[in-house]
Image (tube, rainbow, N blue to C red; front, side, top):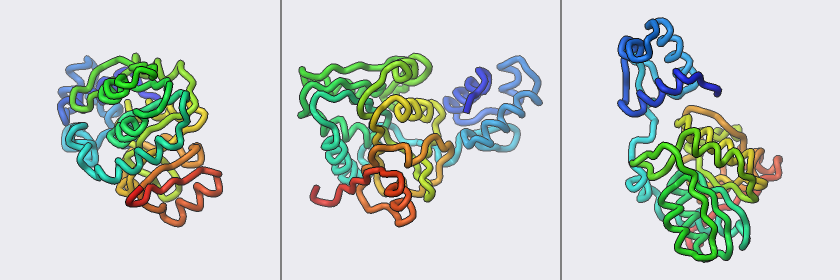
Length: 256
């Protein structure tokens, strides 16, 4: 998943505008249409873009709703998942909290903990956790996404790359039947991958709608996790893979 600088710029351009033509991208970058077409094809093969006549657009499953709008989706389930995940984190621990509304639910459930050291790129999470005076909150800055209320880009990634923590909590947009963890935004994928690599105990939080959801980029395996927290029992095949890898599966049942 190593993109060239031009491919990254193409991805950002299409993310901002929704779509772009090959001719327009070629003029913007000062290269031939054939060169842009190769870049676009590579991005489409990764699932980061989809082909359309004369150019490319965002995948049809790309996240459309803003952070605030998504918070109301499966809100009860996310609350249960948040409380169950927070229960895995002891007092005085160090924690990554990644992107997403389910991760924000974990943050709300952590507010009563004592002396946590939290690293996040989510502005809402950082603002909320600063209410606990015993917490040390590190906000990774970078390029702001207004709709998502977070920061992405190289500056944000640099913080997650250099810090090592005990617990890394992050969401996913899809989980394959064979245990692959997926997302469709390249910047989010890179950040989540760093959480997996730089936390002793990576923890995924995902409600049942994410199981076997078709999304683009596979960036990790369930076998790499310490725990998987969800709101319904996993399908048998996925549960067996988790058990074989020693991954703790926590199901936050109704009433929890």
